[in-house]
Image (cartoon, rainbow, N blue to C red; front, side):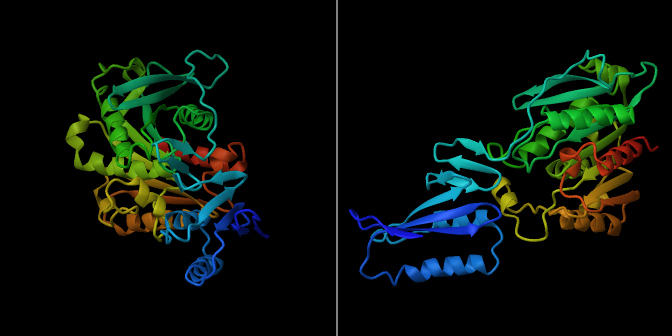
Length: 381
């Protein structure tokens, strides 16, 4: 619907540009005697969108960054689910919004942060939080089965949470439940890493934090490290890396670094890696990755040479048929199989499921199957 303010002569019009996402624009235009220089620009934008621009966020940011003739000022009010968007921030929908004063507003709703609990008699697992570095701040949440046998050493899982590198936490309810349940099911020690998030800390801060966590684990190799649970329970000859989505991406880089810098790990062994719905792009131009990565030359998809350098003897990749990132996962799986690495590669694809379905529906049959297969993988010799 178009309207004109009778006092100022300013014209406005609303357009629904993405019905599924509920994204609209309201355009304001001063009353002009000759608008031919501006109307073609607007027409091209809308035609470009209507011809197949599926990413409403990219469209919005294009609008916000246009430089118009100062005599023909446009003010875009971008309306998304009832919120008014102004040009005093950069919006990377649906992940976060950065204001001019540096504030970051995350647009994804994560589950609640929950405390660790080392003494719940009704739980199948126990947990505690440990700060392993003050500068930068890196913490871990450690899980052990409630029935852990002091006379038996357990495999150790280093788990890296997902969240597009920019949200989620090792301490929130979803990951607390997932990793704790995995520790109980696999009868393993699990160390879940709380790493620094983008955009405040660009990639590769998350890689460095998780590497520091693995090196911290390695300080327990002689049973005299700073954390008693690891000294008592962890078998550091059986370390398995595991992570989902962005966490799976981090696990790959962590494994590659463990292969090239093994001398920094004091002889501990990374024997396996499990990647759940890995974030390796979709084969196209990944705008989020380019924005979050400090090194613009670093590709989202690892080079085809990297898999051959992984130290772990076995890799398992979990895919989901309806996952928007499955093509990147399949490409990575193909690279693994084509490389001449000495080790087993196994791929599981859950039909009819989407990205990280096991977090959204943890009690569904296929989520329980994923947990079972992951548990079995961790305990393979």
